[in-house]
Length: 540
Image (cartoon, rainbow, N blue to C red; front, side):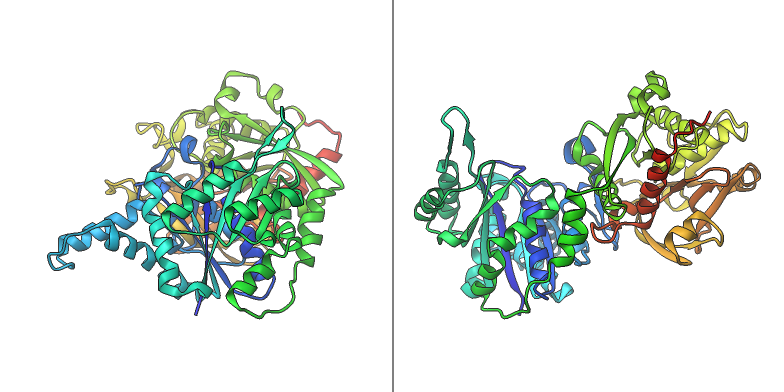
């Protein structure tokens, strides 16, 4: 029977529940146990697919096509867990399911209430993940902070879970803050005491406390937390700000968190195997031999989380190349207003990510033109590929009015147009081309060399595609369509013949990158950028 770890947060948000949950998953896998990790999101949206990136950050897409919270990206990057639509649960999903059942008459006329109907549905979602994943341990991150009104049904379900499954099968971990007050030169434990107190009022006594802190926790501080929060001293885990998030599993292991979890569950496992992670990930992160500057030209640059998986994929590729990747974030709207040479000067690679809507599009195309003409390594993702096609059509093929029907429906040269199956779609949520699709790679191309195989599978999230009626015209001018979706004959990857590294893809490779297994496209991109940085020749 699966064991369950429920992770809650207190005091304030952004304490790193996602990284803590992912790190716990990593140290469990290092013990030879199979894990699955899921996220409870208290918002009423069914999923984040229609949410503004400036509010929510990126939408992480799973293999089976679910649009999920970005925290699932951390779960997959830190562990080997293959997550699905079942691993992200929102209030909207839960209430939608319960109300649909009530409308069908499934409850036989009963009055539908938060307890037991909503809480039972929440618990059933956890059981579903345990069943589908066949995991030894299921880790559940409960989003928000203790005391948030919208999160109360999830916390009540968590309380009931130990009653249902038994003490030895459920472990509660609470993440809290021990702030440092500079004026007093002291760490303060009172916020953590109040946070645990609020959790107790709900009926949950945490077994482990993970304390976010700027300064090390002294024995005296740990004793105080242990006493007032009724937690064993060894279960008060210090979580100082780290130089790299990938060092967190090692810090947890040093403080025997893996042993505490094993003891609670009465589990016996093999010795921890984290040496490869320490050598190939953490050491590479802390001791790079080279440096390279990469420009990310996007629409949502103002919010760090909007391109979270892309930034992490660049960092992973840096590990593989013994290189620190210095990311220069450039707002594509700003690039529209200024000379590209001023904002892009000195970078050794340019990446243009995805997005929706016409804002900042011309700035993206200026960046692509700059990369193409100056032979700077370029990687385009999703909308980045579409912009690369439009830019090439305009400036190489002579189609000055080339555009996408997303931005200019009446354009005379719709080189990017709506997918045929999208033309009858009326609802925006969950209706794009989503999830993993196959792509066949052409021989003697950059894509084939980077992947080292004929058939690949990558995750998609888009409605518009390249218009195949323009394919021959672009090929005559030097564009190579190196990756094709076999079933629909859709262009998935483009590249340029007379360029050291110019490749753009319709899918999102960043979702499949891991710190110890960087995605081949990102790996090749950083390698090319590193070579460019060592070459002092300035292309005109």
